[in-house]
Image 1 (spheres, rainbow, N blue to C red):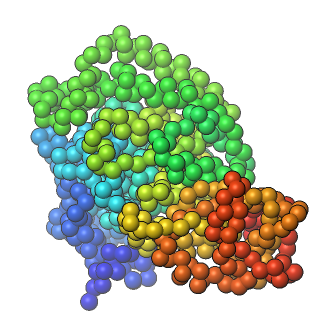
Image 2: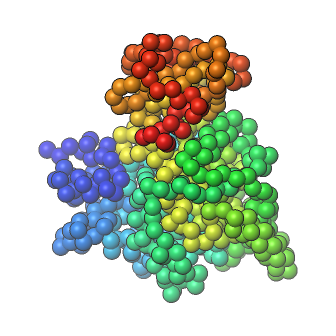
Image 3: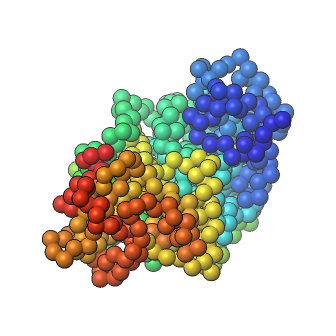
Length: 609
């Protein structure tokens, strides 16, 4: 009997599927049939249309004389945002009356299918790819993969959630203002907005044709790198397609952050919209970059922010009007009210205002390029916070604008970007960071992004996602009593025992230091190696710690897993507060190595592990 439950919970990374196919653990036809059924049974408003059983059979038949060794994406299921053509299903761009049947698939879809990938269907989106929220669809808001009360991010909402929920291994989205990045951040997956023109837009319903990019969502950065290699082909039928000037660059995930110089915006130029946990997570990410050997420098981010304002406050909105002008003029009411308002506002812009805005943008680009020329890339939050669907619907324009604070300038300035997970907010919802650089810096960004993902221990896959969803469910219950615990060693983000916190519904609150009253030791023993934190009367120093919040009900099982000579007690932080933390019995330091001078476990690990 086929174990369909195992198929549903299968690790969905491309490499894991290939291994399962090779070993015989999974049968391609049975597996994809089960995944198609899962898509058809979806209750999260992810899918607008799925392929039929007959169409799936036909696609599988086309693979019958091929093998895993010939096709790098053999039997890998993927999803397609419904503003990208698939010739066996209609395209709607999120508007039923706009529906048409394409004669051929978009070039990027053709390349992926030629590599063996199998599309399961078309996914929901903010109508005409206008929005960063995932709620602007006649088919209903796409529900966040962690908590259905929260937004999933748009406009590529369905494509992101299809990956996050384990429906598919990867998906296609589009990005004009951030739609290939914001949904990745809000669903704890990775997203790549490659250099403009590297991925063909032939067969894509334009939003702003001069800015649009096809994007990828996946579970790991390694997969993004593989997908870019397969699909980044110049297309002479796309007037904005470009030859990859960075084609010789090498993907180097192992040393992705070593010796890099990364810019970070000035503190007053960062915006978290009142979300203190988002601020703490971003500061922790910056600290991780430093600990990994990156030179982090503060930059003036204002020119980037000024350029971003041009996208919706300037005449570029007229491009959205141009994309569907005949359809819109015929009957604007065919669009959702918020889309009608945004696109209808384009008529106030003149050719003169367009040229004036182009001159402003060029001036900003010169200034921004000069800043980037001194760096390898820049790091920002992907989005400063997340909102509930109810909050978004109450203030749709402003909150959408908030979500684009770090994304709207990217295509205007011709930059490449990768979005990577970076922890969980106080709400239990995901948070992410973005690394961006100049055009054709894609491989460098992928290399750096892979290292960030490794540091954060985001292996993802179906099992990890399931654990994360359990965590978010627990934490979304306002009645759950919680406790803060400071960790200083193997339980830190990215280290071997961190899972003992995340499995209990824990999330990172902040990175900070103890008071200057402690000495720090590397304890003797076998892996996982552990430190000992000892309070002393003199010759102490401040030690780096992370504060994690977990449900009180899980503290007992957490404590039970702590081996001697460690235990839980109280430790003083640098702000004078006392917090539950790991403490060490004094006898253990007799055979331990004093590493107090290093100030923390990450510094010790970087030198010795």
